[in-house]
Amino acid sequence: MDPDRRITSLSAVPDDTTFLFTVRNADDERREAVLVRTPDGEVRGWLNYCRHLLDVRLDKGSGAPMRADELVCANHGAYFEADSGFCTFGPCEGATLESVDVAVDDGSVYLVDDDYTFVDTGSLDDGSPSASSTVEF
Ligand code: FES
Image 1 (tube, rainbow, N blue to C red):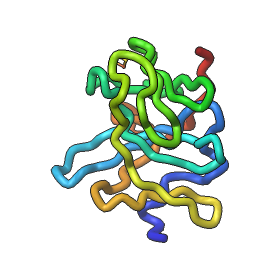
Image 2 (cartoon, protein in one colour):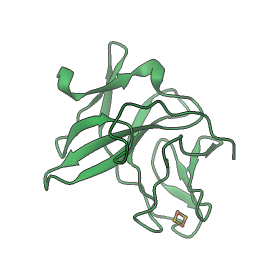
Image 3 (tube, rainbow, N blue to C red):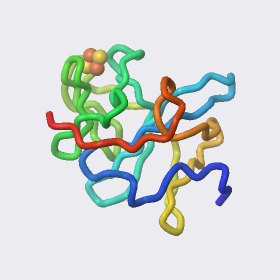
Image 4 (tube, protein in one colour):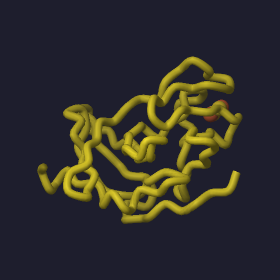
């Protein structure tokens, strides 16, 4: 794996919330993304934007709320399955989060999506490494 595409260690991806990072797309736009654990222990990557109002971030910098293996949008309560990104409840029910392909290798999580370049961990705002923390919902 390309070390420039290493996002973080697998152990840094929490079980009960999200890990926030930043990518750049082909148009040189920076976007936020999150890593999340699936019920079977795998890791998925999703762009960090709700499918109801597309500028609303799921992880606002301290980890997105999760309940029963689903990410929860704190704005209007949409639920998204961690493994499929599918919205099971809420104003955007039936929509799906935009995926960011990631892969785990030798205890690290890598960005393997050709549409994005890894920028850094953390949000667009802080530009600095940050670890997500548990959010009670
Ligand atoms: S902005 Fe996410 S549910 Fe409305």
